[in-house]
Length: 618
Ligand code: ADP
Ligand code: ASP
Ligand code: MG
Image (cartoon, rainbow, N blue to C red; front, top):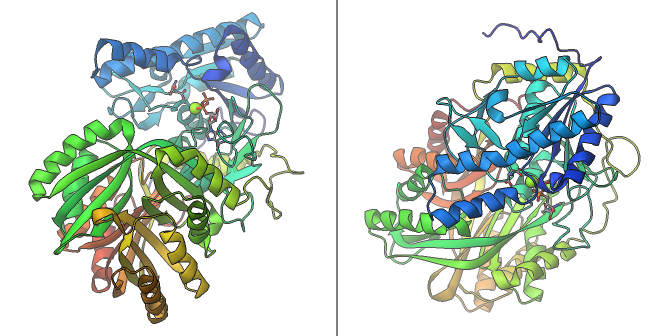
């Protein structure tokens, strides 16, 4: 048992509350803007707070530095890249501190290393292990505004590291967590979180409030307004995050545990334009195949998404997944090795695709959401090339030329511009009001920080087994717009509740779609499925009367790129074959043969024993 947590002597949340403010690149793009940001920090101090300000590199400076490196070499060593990129934030913290001095207040700038932000050694996407707060507290207590460089840290061997593009958000929320800050304000060039990127769709609506889980999914689906790992921190340590404009006093958006409107199926849509789809064809359909492929990818720390497995010819399987186009070169090398090892038929890719996702906590309890999305796309003649769903997210791949139209179509289909009627709000009125945490909550948070051996650790909340499902697979559907829509419309019309949906491109431009349904509804579903297949002139659907669905959910599931691979290894070592896979930020689902459920659960619990917590933490 660890000793009971004792708050530090200088912890007086009731009398002296700490606020963390973060200013993004555009908000410190020139000297005038730096002075404006400095005034915001001073205003918070004059209101009686201790203020920590996290700053990003000025304007597009990080891009300029990356470009410089690329002019020298195509393949810069990651360590040197971090050394270079960290200079961007060092420039801004110094200027910000000078600005505050010039306005008559005390301030001190600190780099990540000077603060003591200790990370692992994964250069260019390092994870935070620990943050020492002594130095910051000391300066705050002396009346300084502390200016912290965003996006950077130092590893055990004193190498400078960076946290990944957009990582200053993560620095800010992490500091708010460990300092027991009452609030974390993210000042940026938009006045809050919108239902989709307002620069792509001016009709997008600013939301007053959004839940951590929804923001996490949106962030990793392409909503660049927040770095996804910052939301993992916020969720883990219950840090209320207030996203607002650097340039206006609009109230902005609160990111908290609860959604804006609990009954709304979809709260936002996101576009990730530069995606690629990779397919490995003709791999053995037996335990160990997924592991052989994904362990190689995990070893290289390449994040992948939308993993789909489909039946190939003669007992073989095809596997596809999506990956950021930037990582394609890297991943194709890995896949060529996997192809040799597995004696696969071919590895192909399509780098002309984009991912459109819709997200909403409400979809977990509502039917017909996927069908509505597919129908809207079909009506515009947009073909869906791949589908995966999780409890609170549906993602589709479409040709890049249709990306923006597809986003606009789904945004319109779910009427995201219209404010929900049953809003849940913090504070009064329809605008976000900053939420303040009470002292017991802050103490609990600090206790949690004190007990964690690593801050950005993988946390598995639960591993669940669902033995109530059956699976139906439509094989060889013609790959033309509208087929997914028709299939789901007809299933919905028959009142059939579909859980997981996975669509992949099969052979000769034919698509396979697998769905899971309740076992009790299998017969009815099959009858409908056969009718659908007949009307589409495709082969009769196949089915498995009993499948088991295993879900691993928690925090860091996707950003720790090895989780899927560990899951596949554990199942493969227990000789359990995978039927379906779907991934999201907060969970990975796999479907296996119904007879293997209990064994699969035991294997996963063993594999993740060190990350599994009971309950939800706070
Ligand atoms: P900063 O430099 O302040 O960190 P970023 O460029 O990282 O700013 O993030 C802000 C940008 O995020 C906005 O300019 C906007 O184009 C984009 N964005 C994408 N999706 C959304 C969304 N759902 N809501 C608000 N902004 C979004
Ligand atoms: N300057 C870094 C970037 O451009 C970090 C950040 O802005 O959050 O990615
Ligand atoms: Mg950003």
